[in-house]
Structure formats: C-alpha cells, structure tokens
Image (cartoon, rainbow, N blue to C red; front, side):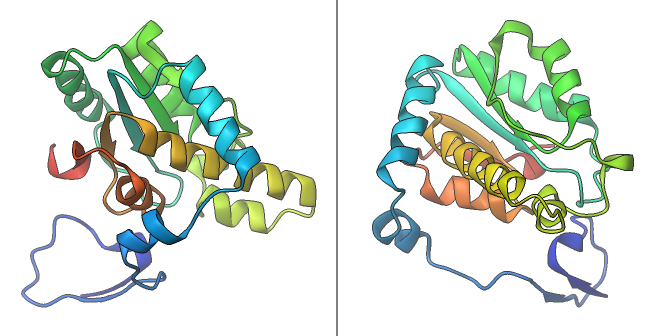
Length: 193
C-alpha cells in the first residue's frame, strides 16, 4: 500500500505501508518557543478567549472533513466529546471545523455549550475535494484568501487555548493546535472511537 498526505486510512491491514507526507516534520518545541504571533492577532485571540471563557472548563474539538474522505460516525465523535465534558465537568465546547453540516449537528447535540468562532466558510459541493485552505488558494479574491487564513490561524490558536483538546490526528492543523497547547489533556479523538 502507498499513500500520500492525509489519505492514509487508520484501519490498515497491510504488513508494510509506504507513506509520503506533504508536510515536513517539525519539532513542537520550536513552535512554542520560537514562533510568535503578531501582537494584534495575539490580542484578538485573547479577547475571544476571554469573552467566551474558553480557557477554563472548555473542551476544544477539531473535525476536518473536506478532504479527509470523512467516514467517521459524527454521533460517536460527539459522544466521545460529551463523555469528556461530563467526566471533567466542563462548561463549554469550542468547535473548529471546515463543514456547515458538522456545525449544524453540533448545534443540535451540544446546544448552548457550543462556542464557535465567526468565520467565512465556503459551501463546497459534497464536502469538497480539497481542504478549504487549498480551495482558498485557488480563489482570485486576495482579501478573501487573507481572511480565510486569518480565521484558520485564529481557530488553530483558540483550540490550543482550551483546557482540554480532542484533536484529529491525521490533520496537520489539528496536530499543530495540540503541539502549541499548554495543556497536557490533549487526545486524538480518532483513537478514542
């Protein structure tokens, strides 16, 4: 079996797997110690985190499915999240996702506990063939590209601000949130199903 990027299925039965990733490896320590946000973006994150109280008793959850051939049972993911909320007596859940359908179902499931960052999210046919970041690159509107990358950076760092984090292990976006988080309560939800 040979896979590139995030197309590596989690349920493999092969004895040997050749895997080529699109992203070079990095040291999480360098992300935390050497890369810093500009003050205005850091302030924007701090304001959102404070206004929505996501640093205390909040679970961060990232679900990426535009280009991940998402086949997970959404209810199972929500039940895993709900178990964390109940076990640790959490008040909120901050959700980062690239799909309206996920937001719609999460709103029904979590109700007033759900916290979302207000971002531009394109409606992509069938969930999209590419990730929204790749979709954004193909757009001619430079202002839209900048806004989408700003929103993605906001969400990546907001996930890292939560006290507990359920990240998606086959997503670099999600893994970076985990790596820059100060919390030791970060779990790959794909391994919790």
